[in-house]
Length: 455
Image (cartoon, rainbow, N blue to C red; front, side):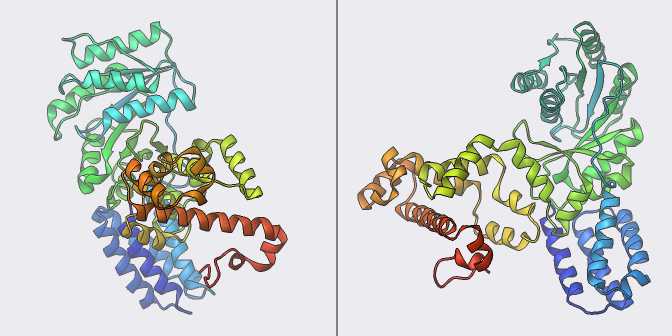
């Protein structure tokens, strides 16, 4: 998400930073390119107009034109306005400030990922907030929709409303609330039916359910990949039934990002959550300032640290660190490290959260280095014997052929893995030998192989 927009804006701002002073004409020329980049990213036209006007009002003032670093000042202004367009500083959480059981109504079009998101939300509320959650499917339109939500509830470790054939969506919603009161649930997630397009019947059904259940949250689920259509869907639902928050799905996909930048301005409702993968735990808070930072190539280090804290095994990480410090690092440790990285997500998503690594991310993408590479390397190590993992030096031609056959890879890939491991081991031995003071004196160049430079 946002790759194309980020690349375009980076080019614009690199040129601005390279100038010692800026004239009003320089700012206007840069803003024309920003405008085109936003329109290409599928941001709504009125949102683009308002955004450029707000940036220009500040960017041609004395604070920029007379600044010591005018290019940096323009970038800061654009960042601030991006944050404002995305909803302001700080994530907006799910509202549970109501008497239990708290109803949460999920609405949206068919195919937006609404039912899966309902399961993800139930898991999140159950695990992170220790809530007793009841999932209820009101979808009598789509075959097996109720069964799908029941299976998601089992995977999430929460309860689901028993299926009674023949009931209307309104009857199911009423029964769900009665069951939740009787069995003392904290939250009821009501998954309504979707349609392939917005119609009067759908809106009337949602209105009736909303009136009967009085939800604390009416969350609209929209697919970020649909671009401007997602914005049109949000506008229609907001005008018809009112939405309190938006969930953008497929934010990890190859989309242009315009939907995210348009939602708040079009509906007035904040983006509260984003779906970032197919797994049931791939649902995250939406932080406008972090997203703005990633768009402008500033990264999201806080998000990366949070993701690491949630996914990495602390005990295993400490064990690996101790072995690295002693220089006693083998292929079993390397495999454990690969597993830790895989838990955090794709390489491209991790790089996207690091400041200034947009170009490296693009190069890695061009080289097609991603999860498939990690999986192949994991398969190669799994095909080795315990002795081979502990002492890689014994892996010669015949062993390589056997490992290649067992892992479905080639001897060349095994050679590449062993070379990477050897380079890593050499670097760790040098770190151990130099110590902290030696590293501080000599810098990164002391760790690099002979004849190479770190940058």
